Image (cartoon, rainbow, N blue to C red):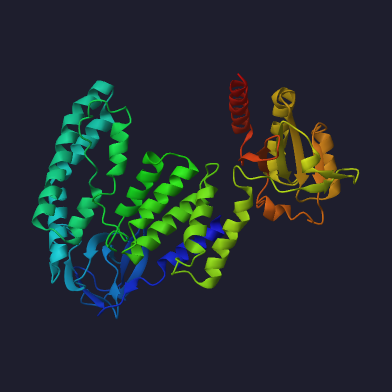
Amino acid sequence: MRKLFVILIAALLGPLYAAAQGYQITVKLKNYTGGKFFLAHYMGRTTYLADSADVSASGDAVLKGKEQLLPGIYLLVLPGKQQYIETLIDRQQVFNVSIDTADLVNKTVYKGSPDNDLFLGYNKFLFQQESLSRSIQTQLQTARSAADSAKVLPLQKELGKKIEHFRNDFIAQHPGTILSTIFLAMKEPEVPQQPAGADSSFAWRYFKSHYWDQVDLSSDRLVRTPILEGKLKKYFTQLVVANPDSIMVDCDEVIARTRKSREAFKFVLWWLTYNYESSPYMGMDAVFVHLVEKYYVPGEAFWLSNEQLNKIVDRAYTIAPNLIGKQAAPLEFKDSSNNMLSLYKTPAKYTILVFWDPTCGHCKTELPRLDSAYRANWKSKGVTMVGVKTEGTREEWLQFINEHHLSGWVHGTDPQAATNYRRLYDVYSTPMIYLLDDKKKIVAKKLGVEQLQEFLDRNMARSEAQKH
C-alpha cells in the first residue's frame, strides 16, 4: 500500500550521517557566478538530496556538516540540475574539487581525495571506450537481421572483457578501497564445467550459492550505491524459487549477512519488506508477514519510531489471517430478504467470495465478467458465487443485481460491519476476490477472471489425478 511505503522510505532515509568529525567538500565551478549547488546520494537506484550550498560570485560553493556522511556514490549536481558528476564518499570527507562544464570527465580535478582520483581514472578509461560503445549501439540499432546483430557480438564481448580486465586489475592494485568494494560487488560467479553425474540444475545451483561471495554486506559502503538494489532484485526475481517458503529462507540468509552493518541490515530489510508487501504476485504477502514477525515485532527495526513500527506490525497482523492456506474467517450476513446466511453453511466444492461495491467502476466491469464465466463454466464444476456488498445503498445493490442478472449468486450484506470483514479479509479495495475450497480454506485470492479459470482448471485436474 502506498501509505505504508511512505512510512518505510521516510524511516529508511532517517539521519544520513555517521558520528565522526564531519565533512567539507569545497567546490570550484568554472563559468558560474551564482545559483544553488546540490549534493545528492543514491539509496538503491533512486537519488535523494543530502545537502546544498549557494554558489558565490567567484564560483565557489562549500558543502559541510558536523557529522560524516555515510559512504557511497554521491552526486555533485550543478546549478540548474541539468549536469552532475558522481563522486565517492568514504573515510576521507574533507577535500576540494574543481569542475569545468566544458569537459566534466577530463577537466575535473580533485585535491585531498585519493578515492576520487582513482574513480576519476576509471571514468576517464570509460570515456576512452565511448566511441566503440557508440559504434556498437549504432550497429545494433541499424541491424536488419539476426545475422547483422550477430556480427556485433564480438565487439560487445571485446568491450566487456576490456572493462572487466580494468576492474580486475584495479581490485588487485587497490584492495580495500571503496571502488574495489563496488567492483567486487559488480562481479558475478563464474560457473565451472559441470561435473560428471551432476544434474541439469548444477549451473543454477552453483551461481545462486556463490552469488553473494564477493558482495560486502558487512560494511555500509554499498547501501548508497545503485549496486546493492540491483543485486537484490536479480537474486530474488531470477534465482530464488518463486515460492513463499523458499523466499523466506533466502530472505533470512541474506539478512544474516548484513548483521555487522547497521546500514546494510536496515536497507536490505527495508527492500525486502517493501517488495513483498507490495508484490503483485499471489501469496507473497506471507513473506511480508514473516519479515514483520521475525524482525519488526522483536524490535530489530531500530530506525523506526513507535508509531511507524505499530503501523507496519498492524498491517502484517491484518494480512496474517487471510494468507494462502489459512482457514477463511467465519462470515455471517443478511441476504436481500434480510435472512441470515453463513459462509460456512453454504456448501460448495469451491466458493468464489467477492467483496464488491455497486458504485465501484472496476466492480461494474468485473462482476458481469465473473458471472459470465460462472454460468459458462464454473457452475457445472461445483463452484458457488458469494457476493458481499461493501458500499453503496441497498437500492443500488439490488438494482445492479437485477440489471446484470446475478441471480445465481448468494448475495449478502453486513451493513453494521458486525463481522469485521474488512479487517478479517483485508478489504481495502474492491472487488476483493477469494477462492475457497470445500472446507473454506483460502486457496487463492486477488485473481481476475482469466487467472481464476486457470487456477480452477489446474486444481481440478490435480484433484482428478490424485483420485487415480
